[in-house]
Amino acid sequence: MRELRFERAGRLAWHERDRPALVDPGDAIVRPFVAARCDGDTLPIHRPVSRALQAGMALGLVDPVVGAICGTVPFRGPFAIGHECVAEVLELGSAVTGLRVGQRVIVPWAVSCGTCGPCLRGLTAKCATTAGDGVLAAYGFGPASGPWGGMITDRLRVPFAAHMLVPVPDDIPAHRVAAASDNLADAWRAVVPPLAVREGGSVLVLGGGAKSIGLYAAGLAIAHGASTVDYLDHGAERRAIAESFGARTHANGRYDVVVEATSRSAGLRRALRALAPGGVCAAVGYYLGTGTRVPLMHMYATDATLRLGVSHSRAVLPDLLDFVDRTGFPAERVTTLLAPWEDAPAAYAAKTTKVVVHREPLGSKP
Ligand SMILES: [Zn+2]
Ligand SMILES: [Zn+2]
Image (cartoon, rainbow, N blue to C red; front, top):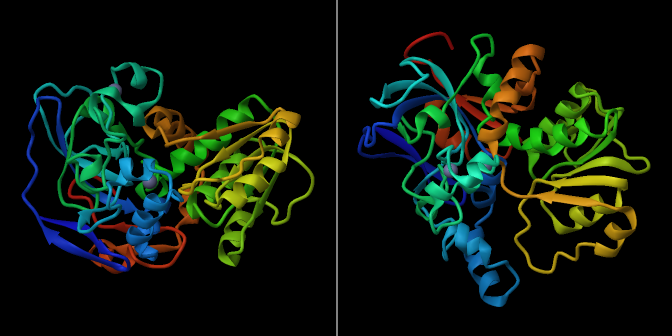
């Protein structure tokens, strides 16, 4: 069987590998049939960052935690890439309850057990059982994040399947929730909980770095009753998508919620300075450098909250899928390249906002 591997910047290819099999009674084997490219995956694909990150860590300019997540030689290929997918269940271990073969499911990007302390608190990407001494247990990040492989593959082993796999309601087209494993769920946590306690609040999105997350966040903010959603980005195509959700493309005044999706420390400083008193900034990018110069005194003066961290997608998936099912939220509008599965090596390297690859499911409806 085949899986897609990242080889080096700009270069991905199909590789043969052994078929994963059920190991524990709680495992499932699934077959991804819709897969999306995470915004974070473009970091090594679009720039040869591995050597720059090694040098940066040696010089103290890049935070050493980058090495803890990605290895001391970050993004060294080849490794199996991809961590957003909708899959169909092929096989279930004897102890798995609540799922059936053929069912359509979301596979969260981070591997979690569902029963440890962090999982019970909703910190499913910080699972104490699966991550062990490492920083992450996840699909598609290479061996530093465990033996789980990538999601652009014919068969994927999922442990703790009764907890991990979240069924997709029948009426939701799979393509609509292609990014629910990570980026769509990350956008959800950036805007939905803060708006729930700031009813009718104003929202600013600084987009263009974490490209799809910023757009999902703009759309979700409008769908959750924000009074204003302003979306700033140098990309005209993305501005048009944001406008199609109902966002404006200029900024004015101060905001109750600011989503920082430029992935730059200058964007982070701008986002924090755009907050209204008591506002919350959700920073969804990677900030690899040391010396980010977060304006703490400004935050003190405005009673600001800065929220950042990995996406705990498993914890928000039930609410997210229920919302998409009820409202028909058109998340697929963010997809700028929809390609056949076969074409994944070229499609996954494309310089575009959101890539989704797809093929026919073997079983039920698409
Ligand atoms: Zn991701
Ligand atoms: Zn856990």
